[in-house]
Length: 113
Length: 112
Image 1 (tube, chains in turn red, blue):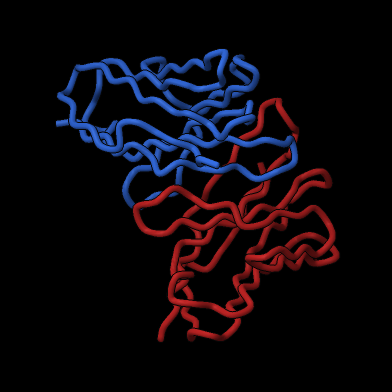
Image 2 (cartoon, each protein chain N blue to C red):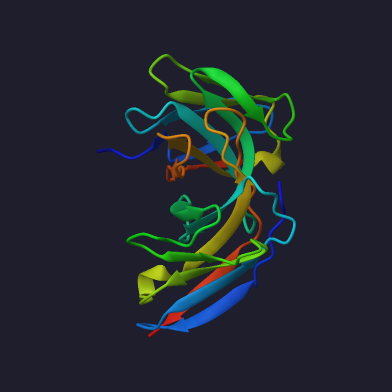
């Protein structure tokens, strides 16, 4: 699995956009980029994933660079409840066969009032 | 619709004992995975099961085993518990081959 690099921590003001970067320079052509977050003492929560194109859902947007070596997760209007550790994960999406999430240390996003 | 449910939520065991953790995936989800999360670290992959067959195993000793039942629920078993097995054990399931995993809230295991 490709390795990812994320800043250990970031701050964001409530109501502003939070932009979380992730570098995955060794990503291969068939590997997806996944984002999860984990609020203290809870299980990780799936946010979004993508392969090449930018993606948007009700939670966030995912911007993947054209060379796919980096991506940015955007929370458009951060709230205090978005304070969590955010994990960027790169891996194969091989359906029912051997597939695992390899978590790094993630980015602790703190949303301040 | 109920999410992924895990039981028990908390557990205290003594070194050398055996433990069984249980997971019920979201209805219709056939893929179940187990992760171990030690304090201060990201979750680490232990097992994946799909259609009742083991499809992946992480770098864990043979003291760790798991199985998936016909109703797609799953058990994680750990024998000869060590202090280092103290962790949050997470179960995750998913519906489609391309979707994200839904995690349960975990079982907090403390080995004393």
